[in-house]
Structures are given as structure tokens and as C-alpha cells.
Image (cartoon, rainbow over all chains, first blue to last red; front, side, top):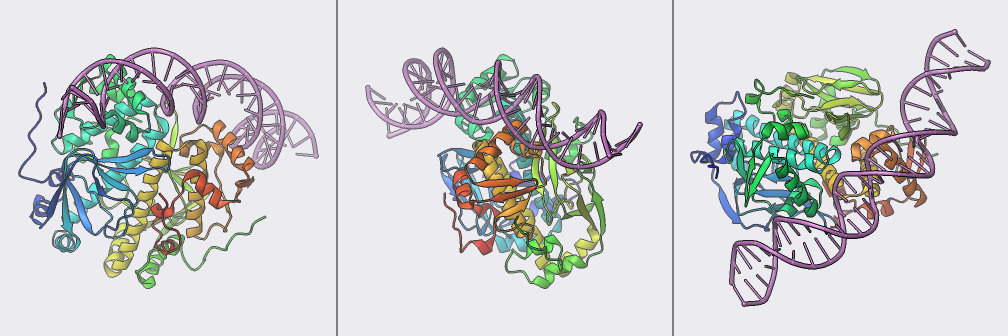
Length: 254
Length: 254
DNA sequence: CGTCCTATTGATGGGGTTCAAGGCGTGTGG
DNA sequence: CCACACGCCTTGAACCCCATCAATAGGACG
């Protein structure tokens, strides 16, 4: 049974994550944790923000998993992006007045609400924080663009391999995963709704990945037994995560 | 043969587009046109910015069509978003140092390059412009999210209908389309690469839409003969375009 | 100890891909 | 000025990946 690194309790996950963006003083960034906030817990399945709702707070994920999702007329659901601890739920709250999609809890989550004026005042004092937050928002944009490629031009096994690798990388950034293992609190239906597949086919494809010896699953723990093989299988390239610290290590292939 | 509204020659398409964002003084916005710039023409098929290139300019589309795209190892291409006149090619140039996808010319395009410091200085003098540009960037994010839904949970005919409606709306915003017609300088292969389909199936599906009497095609001109029927077919809802001027008119359905 | 949700597995069918061939328009060079 | 090449469109045929349907098993929870 793999052990998981302890989260860095000194900081909120977002502050931990922003540390990946080089060139900004740590003091600027950690000032974010000093802002007054309200926190609320939601349970799996809860709608955190409804589609069409007006948004008036800066909203962050502090713990647990959530998702941006859309429900179609025919009853299908598409998960647009998974939101992990450290993700910004409402990056555009200063310019968009209504949310065009739904925010949904995928596990028990803690959501932090900041007052817009509070953050605005802080950003004027700490311009480095503004830059770092902008980077975080840009990173999510990039993740969504990669999701488009995943849905448009990869088959089921490639989509799932790519998805697992992305989740693992993103969890590592906020110190919520081990080198080769992570906790995935997702049902196969939720993976299916993220990847544009059916739950049945997700199930069969997960077994295919296990039979290949690339992953192992035990309850909510997913082990990545052979990350290079997984990356080769789906042409995974971390350029889109814009982790400058990585650039010396892994140069993009294609 | 439909006639097309004359573009508003007084302004750059981006300035025209930013006029859709209410509550910002027009003087702030039109100051954008006063910035010094360099413009360059590209021909269909040219790579405007290569994947992995470092980005040092604020880049805008002034005329013509371009695309964000990715090529997979197996030789497939996925078009992530179509860039029209008035679109911002590098919204994240101030925080990301390399482009994770390719910018490609889909027709003859004029690309405008602004110096980062020039724009930065202007934004300090005209904060309303900063807000409006942020809105434009947020609108593109939203369009990409909708693309995820389109790829993940819609079939071929719905994808194409939805795509045509989106292109028409976006062209209307920059005064490049008539009420019921537009010029689409795209090959069927390019539509296929945008929608995750094959060119063969795009061809057959376009005929299906014509047989239904919803569209008509003559060379590069595409007419939308029955927009309500098209919208009903694919569950098109403009909420994701965040056009405040529309909100009184069309409330979201689902 | 029933109930509900999730996981699992097999069978069937269809939407879309792939392969292949022909037509059409446009540009280019002899 | 014609011949040819090339890119794009069009159409048919065969196939396949994945959806759908259905039925069972396995927890978690009250």
C-alpha cells in the first residue's frame, strides 16, 4: 500500500501551487492566506454553483474534488474540467457576471469564498500575487485546451491513460499524490463523463490498462506502475502544464 | 446571393468586439487602436507561431482566419479554436513564456503585433481597457469549454450545426456576417479537424443538413436558412458567449 | 436485511472511420 | 492555349470502436 506525502499544512493548496511559478516573491504569494474568508463544506453530488448563477465571490477549492460540468438536454453530462485543491473556481469573476456552467462536488469538498474587494486591495499591494494568480488561471485554460485534443483525437485507452497522467501530475503539484500512486475519488461514470465515453467502456478499458501492467487499482487508490509506458501510449507531454521547473528535465517531443 | 454588412472601418475588429462589453467607456477601448504596431500577412497553411515558441508580443488577428491547433504523433490534427478578426492570439503573454500549441493561418490573415510594454503602459492609463480585454479573453475560454461539450457529448450533425451557429454569432459580433449568411473559408477537412470527425463524414453530414433545408452552401458562402431549427437540433444556447446585450432577448433554455 | 449505487461482464447494434475511386475546379508550365 | 497536376469534394463499401441494453455481483448504509 503506497504512502502519500503529507499536505503542506503551512499553506493553502493554491499557495503551494503558485510556488511553481518562478520569479515571484514568496511573501507576495503567501499573503493570499492572510485574507479573510468564509469556508463551506459540500458533499459529493452537491451543486456548488448553478449554471446561470451570478458570481460575486472569488471561489477556491481548499480540499476535495469538484468539477465544471454541463448537462445536455438529452440528459448526458460532460465534465469540462476537474477542480482539485488549489484550483480557482471563478477566475473571471471580475469580468463575467454569470457562470455558464455548473460547479459540482465530486467528493466532500471545502470551498473558500473571498470578498472581491479584499482580493482586489491585496493585488494592488502585492502585484506579484496578481501575476501568479494569472498564471494559475492560464494553466487551467491550457488544461482545458488539452482536453479538447484528448476528446477530439484520442481513442478510449489513450484518453484514459492521458487523463490518469494529468491527474497524477496535477495532484503532485499540490502534494496530494505519491510518486507512483494517487487517490482518485471518481466513479467510472464520472471518468466517462469527463472523457466523452460510456461508463461500460471505461470499465473495460481500465482493465485493459491493468492487463498491460501499466496501472493497478485498489478501491480509490490508483497506482501508475509504468509512467513512461503510459506516456508513450498516449503521447503525453507536460508542456501544457507550464511547469517551468520541469523545462530542464523533459523537453516536449512532438 | 446575400449581401454582407460592411466592416466598421473606423475600428479594428477587436475594438468593435469590445464594444459588446458594457460599462466600459468607449474612449478607453478605442485607445487600443492608437498603439504602435507591426502587421504581417500570412497565407493559408502558414505557421504563424510554432508550438513551443517563446512569445514576446501581444498578438491580434486583424483580418482573416487562423486557428489554434495541435498535431498528434500519429499525424492527426486537432483544431482547438478558430481565431477570427478581433481575437487575441496571446492573451497570456504576460505570464506564459512558451506557447503550448500552434497558431496556423486558415486563410490569408493579417496579424498585428504589439509591444508588451506599450500595451502595459496603456492599460495603466485606461483601466477600462484592461477589463474589456480580460472579458475578451474570458469569452474565448468559455468558447473552448463549450467546444469540450461539443466534442464530448454531441454527435456529428449536432457538432456541425452547433459549430456553424457559433461561427455565425462570432462573425456577427465583428460585423463579418449577415443575418443569415457568412463566408466560411474552411475546407471540410478543417471542419473535421475542429470537430473531431473525418472529412468524409463531415461531407455527408453537411448534405444531411442541406437536405433538411437548414443550410445552403455555395462555394465559401454558407447560408443559415433556419436558425431556430438549427439551434433546436443541437441545443444551442448563447449564454457561453457572455453577450450582455443579448440577455434581455434570449434566456438560456437548459 | 433490504435498498441503492457502483462495478462488472456479455451480447448486439450503430455511428463514424477508413479505404478507394472518380469528378471538379484552378493554377501552371510547356 | 492546352495538358497536366494537385487539392478538395463527393460517393460507395467494408469494417470497427464504442454505445447501448441487460443482467449479476458487490459493497455501503440505514
